[in-house]
Image (cartoon, rainbow, N blue to C red):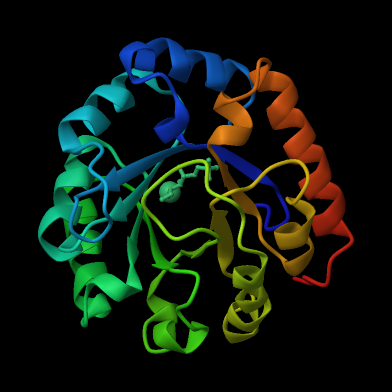
Length: 233
Ligand code: DX5
Ligand code: ZN
């Protein structure tokens, strides 16, 4: 993978759920690189969204990698179900399990059994320090930094959460860093200049009249800022 390539991942949470198939087609035609799928269980976060059944249905409609973000209290039990359902990238929260290595091993085993290539990632809430992933950072393919408190789309971007990006990259310079929450054309340069390459955008894409224009503006701003940033590979 080209380490400097910008990846824009529209979040289906902001799509029209009654027209999910059409929304997926529209956003893929508009240039989405990944599709971000927010899974919430009403325990880890105060909201309930979708489960493996919907992920399976989305997978049938989608040609792009499915980036499944587990905001659930028990990723160890449920992560394998999302692999079976079609997740290509599967992320879970470091705050959700005291034995994250065990969750990662379970995901790798499930992927192997299913004969699927799956990228595994850890997610950090805005107030969770990079040191929390120190013991397991070598076991994953990507790390996602939350720039809102998880649970809902449409919240304001928390800029201070992006400060940890450089520290994470110091721990592992080859890591793919993703950011999730409140990203729009006005602020995308902040995380990009710190070395973030994957940008989740819900409201900024699905709230726009022209999905293609919105994605292309986000991409262009991120590319410029990432290129001019300090992230040297
Ligand atoms: C928040 C979710 C995000 C959210 C992003 O808990 O993880 O993926 O949908 O939506 P916006 O871009 O509107 O913040
Ligand atoms: Zn998300």
